[in-house]
Amino acid sequence: MPTGTGVVDYFGYADCIALENGHTRVVLGLHGGRVLEYAWKGENAIYLDPAHRGWVYEAGKPEIDPSGGRFDIGPELVIPAHPDLWLGKWQAEITGPRKARLVSMEDGPTGTQLVREFELDETSSHLRCTQIIKNISTQVQERCHWSRTFGLGRGICLVPLSDHLNRFPNKYIVYGPGPIINYQPVDPNIRVREGFLEIVDTPIEAWIAVDSYAGWFGYLMRNDLLFVKRFPTFPERMHADLTGHTVVMWYNKDQMCELEPFGPKEILAPGQSSSFTEDWWLVPHPFPEPGVDVDLEVVKKLVASEAR
Image (cartoon, rainbow, N blue to C red; front, side):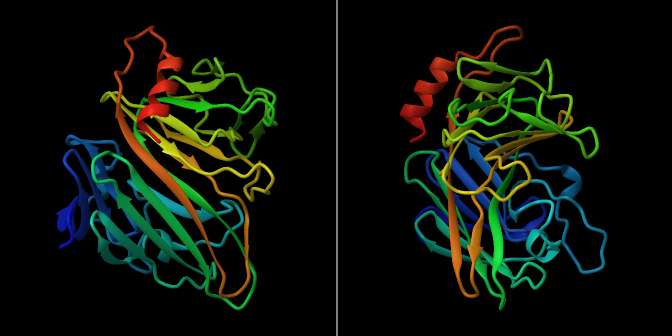
């Protein structure tokens, strides 16, 4: 095995791929091509529902919405259903020191095949995650990258804003209740402070969208870890999802928060591919005591020095 790699059983699944260095471990599950563990010194940042342990997709079997560090493709509300990509078994290959590749089956409904490449840094928690979308059909396909990572519940979301580009009056919108899109929401757990959209606890409505072009956000968890995602943004390009957002946070009550960068619309001719890369870090940072605000200047400096 190349340095920092292995094959392990994890969360009821055999033959998972492990990538690790001195303090960070990543475990990749083949069912749905998910990240099952992203841990700093044994503290997993990924939420896993115990009821999903070892769950395997079979055609015709009732489906679940699997937990873990998920990736997907969009646009969400118009793309055909694709359980083979979302839940099916992927092929795995260790490609080098702390590096692996997952490959989906070919999916007829969406006309795509997905490749996910992961690389863990030799010394830090930096995990590079690249998703490649291939058009395997005979028609042009419009698709986009959609990340759907479950972080542990009741954390604090910190999204830096781009004031000169933001199109939403309150700097964010919410979906709900029902099919309503509320562009002037009021929620005591969501606020704008010092150039950040801050979600300090589980919001009233589950789905919050932001069109920040800062290229990163953080999620501070109660295990004293700041989960940072960096990703490219493209202000000059169209985003395919309904409100043109670049970032979404979605909550399932107090259980977890889904951390979602969105890529721009990709118009793929037959045989063409596109790729989108997210860079992840886990940075130790104390969760604030009740009634105490996160020091946003400290967070900015920490991200600039430790998550780059």
